[in-house]
Length: 398
Figure 1 (cartoon, rainbow, N blue to C red):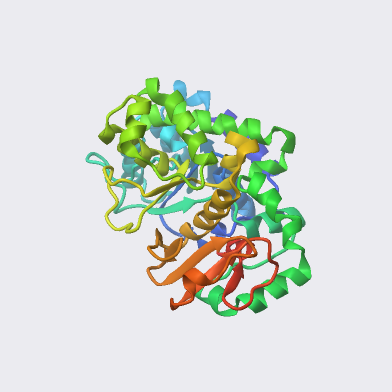
Figure 2 (cartoon, one colour):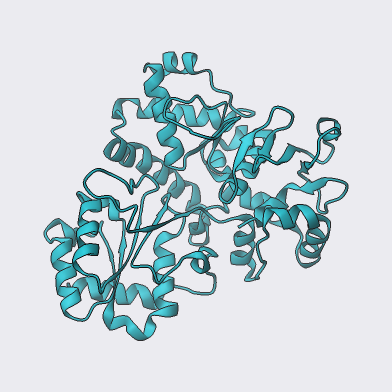
């Protein structure tokens, strides 16, 4: 246990706190059990360590951070460590990479029930299942999903600024004034296309020249290890799934023909639909529907996007379709806070009320002229005007 404490203290001393994700303020840290789900590389570990450094620095003796991918746990039980920690006065336990531990949900349930004096914060893969037959954590845990950086957070991180986020209603009411205020402080297009290429994952700050290598490693880890282990995806189909991701990246956007795809990949229709559902869960793709209510494994997506634009550039840098990139960015930034669906009249409808047509600066108003609460979302414009909102501004929703 001492070696885990030593590593944890070293991590705390080295973690930077000049930039902190907005999620920090949204989490109810007083809860006894907090679960933070998210894709690899979005900053879950950093969030935990920053919270300890900022708010528990005077209580380090009663606080412990551990990662369950540490080799120490190949020979030692988590429950034994927790028992010793609590007997030594432990009150705050932060557990990273919980999905690496066998029967993790049952173990966490037992720790929660057996040590009522202990506060637990747990992070894991976006594929974590909170509800299962043996250990129902849904009644015990508050669950948060952590996305990658928004465009706003990217700017704050890069420039050490403090731009605030806007609720959708406020943004749609005041987009002319908001876009003008932001553009007086920075030139959005000096940074926007960099964000599309590498700004979603915070590790771009470490070694930018290695960014796509690391991102490819994350994709491979999800496809080759997490999906087979946690969703029983057949490893024989992984290369075909990688090809599918590349096709989605190059499309404008991708409208799936399930019958043709299942024949091409060599699996039946139901299995393919299930795999697409898992890719959505794993934050590798975004599946778009005309009605998102009651989405199941076997509901065919009407369009497929990669989860974020960084993945597009990682998988096919030279064949990016600009229309696809615009829609991918819009979908990604909006879906983290709001319900977004495909529309019969425009590209998207948000919260079943606001309609949006996505395009370049010369996009016409034809498709929205007879619609209420409808907007053109235009790339390549700095300021909003006459129901035309800059695309980049939707990066300020979280």
